[in-house]
Length: 152
Image (tube, rainbow, N blue to C red):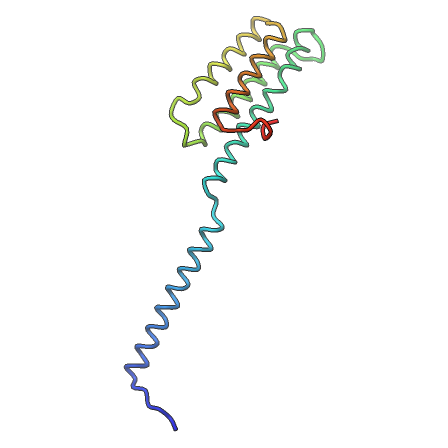
């Protein structure tokens, strides 16, 4: 025996089914999109990676500086200055991406880079240069929240 369902009821059920399907599809799409999109932790890790690249470049300079002072290895104050400039540009990129840091956050590290450049020009003792690099690396690690284990 067939049951007669009026056309208006069928239309209502169809509309309710379509609306429910659209709402369910939007909800599933939202959940999948949120789960697969990069979050703040990803942004922070990317910026910390940029800062770590800068500290890695800096940590190489004391060896090169010692060779330059001794006149060995083809190193010169120009190559050291160039290496410091590249490291500072890398750090500037990290600051530019770290939108959560306040304006002027780079002032301390900018001054430390200037001090390193002055040490190179003055021909400071390698141990003094190395200590200044270590201090700068520590400052960068602190500013960007990089742990000693992750940085080194």
